[in-house]
Each structure stands twice: as structure tokens, then as C-alpha cells.
Image 1 (cartoon, rainbow, N blue to C red):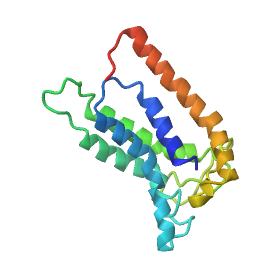
Image 2 (cartoon, rainbow, N blue to C red):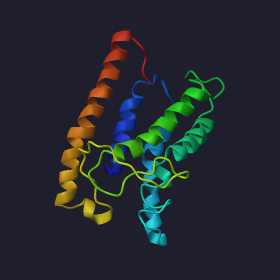
Image 3 (tube, rainbow, N blue to C red):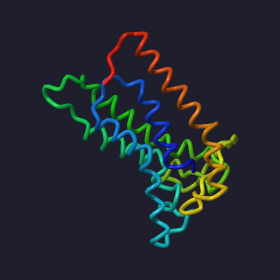
Image 4 (spheres, rainbow, N blue to C red):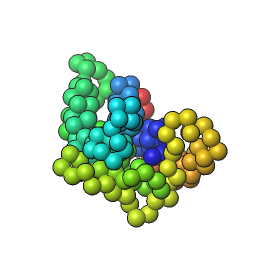
Length: 182
């Protein structure tokens, strides 16, 4: 997997295209991007990596992304009298679903692990993309090792730089269009 922070970086970079969103939008965006890795707790319960509810299983699926997207969109109901325009429940549902699904998609670009169960719970088959340039992140204390530093170097090229370009282009667009930012 890319490091948990890289998932949040991608989501917040993409979210720069949204205009004038309340703080809870940003909290939900980051939370949705990082939530699929909550499945690492399954190791403590003896659930094997390759099981449906193991790491990169159900919580990395499109089905899970839809469930989380629905909950997040429901929680983002607009405040009466708020100066921030309501983007609409459907748009938020699609956004939060996409942000949650982006986690598994990014993980499928890594060079390690056992693949992503995109279609769980309907199938436990796991997938990778044919091109996997991102170094897989060690889980746990292994993150603070020379290998962990190599992962960060890999992510800086394949995740952070494209994210910075995406966020910068959104900010430039906002500036050129004279739109206010929140």
C-alpha cells in the first residue's frame, strides 16, 4: 500500500477543485481516503491477509466505497443559512465514493501484497494493475526503516508530485476565474 498519508494527499489534492466547502467536507474527504486501511486490525483477530475481511479485502472493494460514500454524503447535509452553497447529495455521494475507491486503486499500483479484492463481497479474487511503479509500504514499525524511506521516495515521484500538480492547477484555475476560496 502507499503510506496512509499519501491516500489523504491524493484526496485533498483532488478536492481542491471543489469550491467553498465546510471543514467537515475536508474531514470526510481525508477519512474516506484513509478508512480502507482500518482492515489492518484484522491481523489482531487472526484473520489472514488473503481472507475476504483481511488486508486489502472487503474494505478496499467498490462495494465498500459505495457504502462509505452514502454515509458520508448523508452526513454532509447543508446547514440552513450557511453562506456555503450545497453541492447536492448526489454529487457528494459520487465524490466520497470515488475518494474511498481511490484507496484500492492506488494500492493496485504497488509492487507488493496479494492484490485488491475490488469486487468483494461478490468475489474474493484479488487484482493488481499490470504497471506497478509504487513501492509497497511496510506495515507497522517497518515503516520507520530504510525500506520505509525508499517507499517515501517512490511515493514522492508517483503520488505526491502528481498530487501537487493537480492541487496547483485547481488553485490557478480558481485564481484566474476570480472565484473565492473558503
